[in-house]
Length: 465
Image (cartoon, rainbow, N blue to C red; front, side):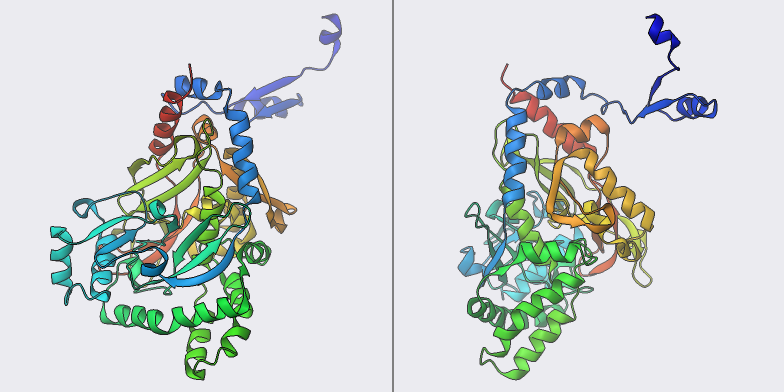
């Protein structure tokens, strides 16, 4: 004891910085600890889940499986062939929802898909058909092993990317990217939107299928690894990824024997659409997160998705159960004369990119993203560093040069979110709230904490006594 008293004062400070700052000003050595109380009302559930003896091993296995997952583009096929969708059947982004609660963008996309499939001859007729529910049905893309951007609506005649994970044998899929602005996934359904979808089904899809089948599988995970080191974060910035994909596909496209005008149109469409590769990052993310699913005791988040009304998550230890709460509205930059009053609440399956450790989690790799979604470069760096606090590990495949090649934060843990109060950061597009509007901007958003507290309660209930 006397020895301790003879030593210099030693102080550990937790919580607010005022006490530590005062001592530092007096030249007293202080060790600061970034401690936060858990989210209100979660203490008992947290204690029960953290004491689950299955959790450490289950989470270790979940992380290992996520890091080992691969992603190869193996085919491009119509949804009727790949998924067995029949006329009147649709898939959509986010957790399950009916027409009565569907957001404007989701309604608009379902109307457009109905027109595209010839189920109706006018928007009014399509809306009446969908509202009545006779001969039509829809379900989440995630329920069928895939993902859809924004409204995420998929119908039988739409073409899909098909990806394969060599490590697990799983497959995942996503629709083809239409570009930005007035497009179906943002809820637009004008004649130009339908004409574009028809061209994509008659020219783009078949030519991409030919290129992939002739050229062999495309290693999507390898492209993602490169693009992260070239300034893309995989959600709202995919410029390098898109051009690397086009580089890999062009030789087979040119030698396919297709009319040169069609090849030129496809090359121009892909090369001129910086977001084209997003629709390959997303199913790569689905393969990675699905590898961690269905491990009893695991607290790893395997899905974050939104339908424009609800935000929903799924967790490894609770299987296919959805934990939902009202979606927040993104804050960001708007196009033209649009503003916050035009914005719909958060929508889309593209938050799978954050679930895999990219997007908002990898903003440090793409500081230029702030020009598209708002914020500042220091904000982007700080955000990525903060996301390590709620994840189990790092993915060395997606290394960020500005953070000394530190791997992307991977494996969102429900217990870490509720213990720290830190929510995942998501980069996203902003859809107009009125059906038929299309894209109105891009910005940043976070999930509602209720999703994580509800999941924690379910995990606690499933913990053995």
